[in-house]
Length: 70
Ligand code: SF4
Image 1 (cartoon, rainbow, N blue to C red):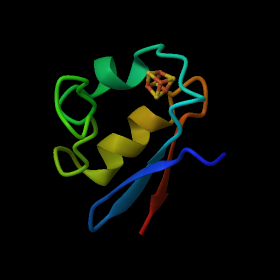
Image 2 (cartoon, rainbow, N blue to C red):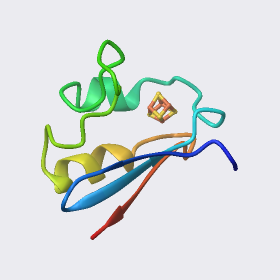
Image 3 (tube, protein in one colour):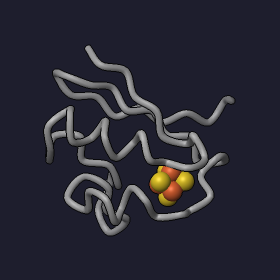
Image 4 (cartoon, rainbow, N blue to C red):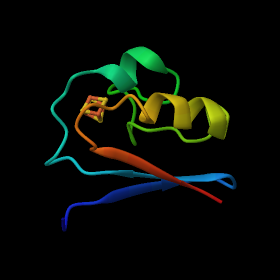
């Protein structure tokens, strides 16, 4: 698990593992203002509340997205 990217706000830390992602799109459809492949970085952790982000990450089928609440 060497390829972990982290995205951090004051409330939450998101971790994303590209090699685990199956591109099911649950994240980009569930919360497009945060998970947007057209932006860099593709995750904007400031664009929604930690609760909203956590709810979508809980639906990630592969476990590529995880989070830690601060
Ligand atoms: S929901 Fe998870 S598996 Fe699906 S695209 Fe997003 S990160 Fe990848």
